Image 1 (cartoon, rainbow, N blue to C red):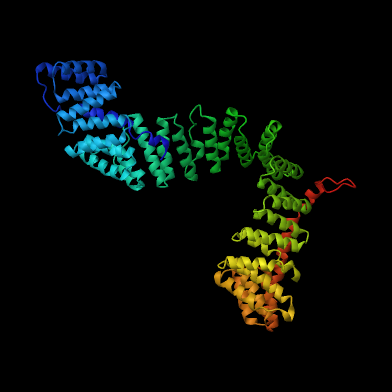
Image 2 (tube, one colour):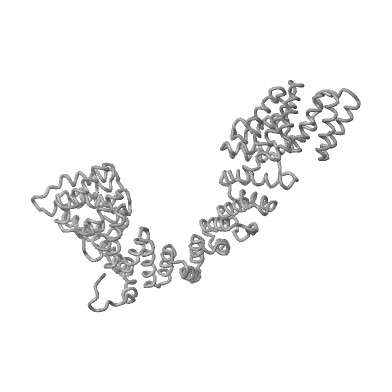
Length: 613
């Protein structure tokens, strides 16, 4: 529930209940004509806000010996209005003693306790009033409203529904009833109640109605309707930050159905924190242009706010103002050399084609905050993405020592080795990443890349580790594939001495656990082909192609098996498809490598005799 709703549960209830109570008939007739006249005069004084005069008049009549309960009722109301709460409570309790069967004393005592936020006492008093007069509107409304304040929403809704039946159309009752239903997670029912009445003429009450209607609509995921309600509430309360925040949130959530440009201006004199929160809200919905002035204002109020600088730079960049983002960060770095700013600057420089500057900025980030894993990863990836594999490997080597539980650092190290054909070292790093994060699809996909490049001896150190992983996660199709594939290739390399029974069990297990696993079908097909079980091999290769029609190796191997089976037409067809796919893959690889030249040529040459340190 938004704060501006929680804050309005009770205050205006007190006013209404006091007014209703004043309008109730007297419990007993005053004893004399003078007392009658004094009573009526005191009531008029209270209605006109002359509480001290009313109090003095009633006290004088009581001191003169009058004991009518109505006088104690007036005394309690006057004392409450004057803030003399103890006297008010004593007067209402006297009223209850004088007229214990009436609801009036309990009602007014409940109102007093409500004003003092003593909601437990208020609820108890209103219960007593309700017990004496079950259809008393004030008792039902007061009890329901007290229970709302006590978060006892189910019982509150029941009381307020009864109050509505006594006085249909009453705004206060309907509002509190809808509020109780909404807080008890019955937003649809709350909406039905709100639809039974309209916003009143009183602007304050109308604002509260529209605010609650907005919250209910938001609960029901009716963002456009919620936005319209909040817009009306904000027109009434243009200084409410909470309502404006809700208006922005729902307008953005409504997406293309509402134009963001038509949002009204935010309240005046927002704090730096409020401006920043608004900026973040705009950013989270991709409204970068609208976020920029909010972050700019945050920085105007708090120039040293690092988060605001970072977010403003992001907003500039995402709004197509990369140069403004770079200028902002550079100006900030002149007086505040912060790692996060250097890291962001590096990303912007990379996007702008300033590759050498990007590396330098990433290096500054690492130097300023060597405990931040992200900065090492970003620096390593900058080198790796531009095929500068030696520096990339060194960054990731250091990072794996500093952050031994980061699987992505080991992936970076593995790809650095892989790129320079250090396949055994790459396999070791890939397997470590798999051990750290065995259920990561990205780690598994990376691990597969090195399989075809390993020599038989390279599997010796990997097999025990993969066996342990498979044993630890017996329901993982991916780990069964990893161990089964490594074992298959290791055994196959031994020729006549190798045995394929265990890898076959593992690969069949992998396919069984995940029937749409194209890689397992492909590897199992190769195992069947090695055992001369050609039809089984064909079935597995076809299954692999069904899952991945662009697998060039699956088409190639299927063509080879068809050739062994003397099914030459099918073999020719599959091998032609293989050549077509292989050519496409080679073209893609060339495109990926085309970015290397500019980066490599931009690297400064090392002076002769200089070490690599």
